[in-house]
Image (cartoon, rainbow, N blue to C red):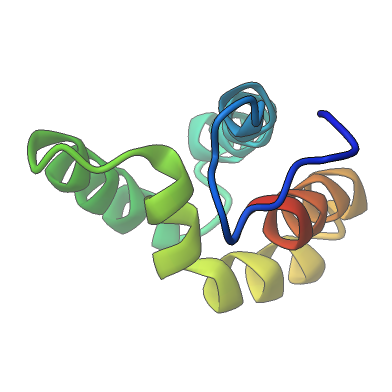
Length: 91
């Protein structure tokens, strides 16, 4: 990410997609384990958002408090840290 990047001006040159992909890869591990009743709902909402033309950054933003709380309760500090980094940089 460029040191001149300002998310309030433009996302041009921002690499939020690769960071969102990393967060999603880790979330998919939880989905596969089915370690929460939230994950099927999250998947349905993500699918719906994609059909509406929305991206994963928007999906994460919509569920940010829930995701943070859930990841903390699952003791997944690595995914939580990535999500917070994504939030602070691009949301």
